[in-house]
Length: 119
Image 1 (cartoon, rainbow, N blue to C red):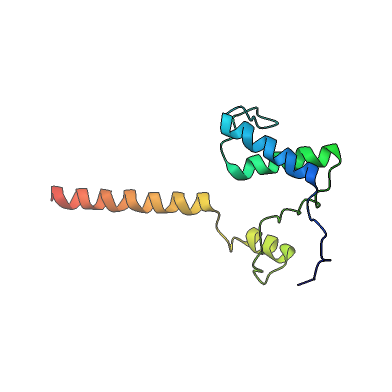
Image 2: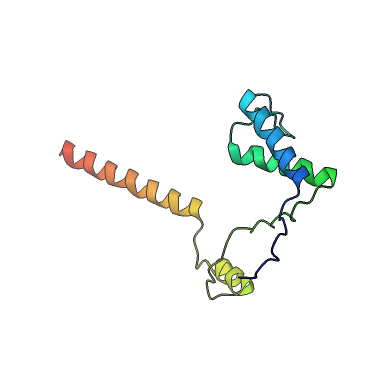
């Protein structure tokens, strides 16, 4: 872990004030979310709003962390072109086809059971 310089603040005083104001507004029930305008109830969201406002006003706030998209993907071992070729041949069945096949099998089983009962 990288050591920080002694006495250096990660967040400026103005950022702290902005977060404090957002927290008070949340407590009072008057803090609204930016885009949807819904009431903010979560503590983390209030802090995020405070920091974002501080960032806009030019206070000392670290850069936002980039969000990870989808997490780590597992490799299937096939390239996309190989996957497409297998799909054309009919090697992989889609979820809709699988569902249709299972419902058809269930219906057939029910029909056979009914015909046995009648005999």
